[in-house]
Image (cartoon, rainbow, N blue to C red; front, top):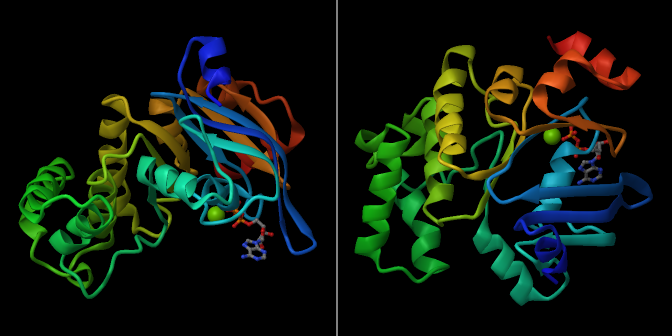
Length: 252
Ligand code: ADP
Ligand code: MG
């Protein structure tokens, strides 16, 4: 199942081949083809309802696709629970609304999955958690509860929590769109740092400054399809499709 990667001589972290998904009768994703190499940073944008969230949620099986293939690190995403578990360990996800456990402290949020899923001893898990809380610049918040933090701080906890599982790839679904403007930068700065350290990233975001700074490629989706993709400079300066031009004229 790693033929594609070995053929190109580069490791493919994510591959979607003619991937289709329906919600009941509604054909939400149509023949999606996407290859993400190790270390690549991809930004996905497009109008609301175009299927961006659904696509990235399919990659760690928060949603199930019906046709075509999804491979993560060469492992095919099928009904096989072993494959799903393997893929979930490789893939970190950060959501728009943080999705922290409100009844657990920041530190407990960070150590929960490492202890229960990865069977890492608590002391070690806590040391790792503190390391990542320092990376996102909030080690002093470790004993607090999510509700005591600002939105920007909560999102940085969510990023640290994901990193504690040592993922090979991180998926971000509009991580800054629920934040007050003054908090967006502190989250983007953490994401930019992650990108610079070589993390493979798939980010749904309309932060075009971020796209220009770190993306290797920008993908534009509309009506459940990938309409256009290009490296950022070309994407922003020379969009090809009318839908892309219209979208860019509305957000920039
Ligand atoms: P985006 O993230 O680009 O805004 P989504 O992936 O959230 O788009 O949604 C794509 C389309 O699928 C929208 O029309 C949305 O209403 C629909 N949709 C999303 N989730 C569900 C669901 N659980 N059941 C039925 N339809 C859904
Ligand atoms: Mg969405």
